[in-house]
Length: 181
Image (cartoon, rainbow, N blue to C red; front, side, top):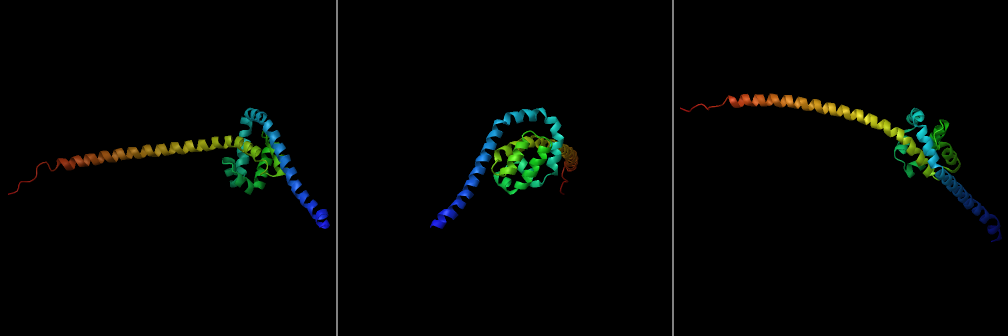
């Protein structure tokens, strides 16, 4: 029993304390990020036009899993794509995207699962550029669809006019049935 208490139990305590310290440090990093959110939002609004092209380039170069995660942030996909998220945040911090540096540092130290809030905040800001791009393509697709629908309606009207004219001719022809003898 003496060996168990002196050797094994302290090792277990180290393992569990290590996780607790990591979680508390991650919580502190999230708290400090939350306090600075307003500053990051202001900085983002000021640099919006400068960052748009750079962010879109980084977004298009990223993997499809990261693109889906940026559009729809989910906890499970964040856990699955931890290394991709870290790389994406690193690329954003290189272009000095507001808030991405502290998030990248926290993500690399503690892992993305422990700093989900700040990561989702940065992804939300990135998605504002992406949504605008998708809306433009959707608008173009909608315009093309409207044009094709209008063309189809014109064809239907022309075809219906021809059918009505043919129907009138058919109706006009048998005005009086032939008399039986």
